[in-house]
Length: 274
Ligand code: C2E
Ligand code: MG
Ligand code: MG
Ligand code: MG
Image (cartoon, rainbow, N blue to C red):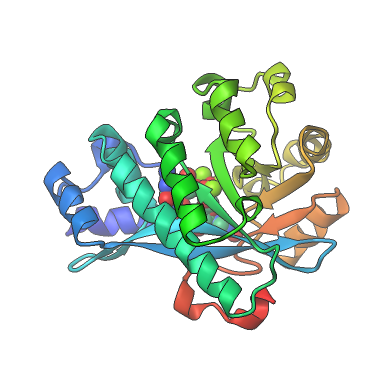
């Protein structure tokens, strides 16, 4: 009970949890059951375009609706799903739910260029069946591939995935985002070979923005990201002050609690997507 409380406190501050601290109820068997019972749900968080001044995309963020422990953050389960190699089935389920929801919003009058951004792990991307699956779902739900974006962390893009693997995805029309930029290892030469649509600057930079050095780094960081891709997204904008600062340094899009928290589809008003 204490451990779970501590876990919730930590996930509320979005610190990184290690396998060693994941609660003991998160076993392979229980995770397998959660997939079978469809206990994983997708929450959506708005990505706000600065020049458009509206929602341009939604990020799909997984939650575990645990019957006893409530709604659990990805800190509880992503690492273990990965270790137990359940991330494939989980990832397919999340992808399908997100695309199905995008199709529903499009039918209900969402802007035709609204896009859905989905996190994928390197294991999924390396699996040849993954591309076949996402292609089949995009066709099945009749959404344009251009409205679908895959988020891959900086580190994974740089080290673990071949240019050819990424090209099959971008050639089909799906967009690619580099996630958590600035926290991993970068090979800038590599980025020139990859067709990246957005770069998302990790929220840890803004957390520390009162520190003059962090602030000094932020401006050239945004310039670098803008040179690498058509769209620079800043994550973790919580206050009006941060919003104004981020806009003043030229970021193209903003994601953060200032605009909206991740929420279930039912809590998102269709008018905000029109
Ligand atoms: P991420 O992809 O970098 O997603 C952004 C995270 O920042 C989300 O945490 C979001 O709730 C949080 N966030 C957004 N705005 C703010 C803000 O203003 N302040 C603060 N403090 N936090 C903010 P969340 O939903 O807990 O997800 C954590 C991570 O779990 C994600 O980071 C992503 O790496 C991973 N994840 C989530 N869903 C999936 C999934 O379906 N598949 C995979 N492979 N990973 C996922
Ligand atoms: Mg992401
Ligand atoms: Mg991120
Ligand atoms: Mg992250």
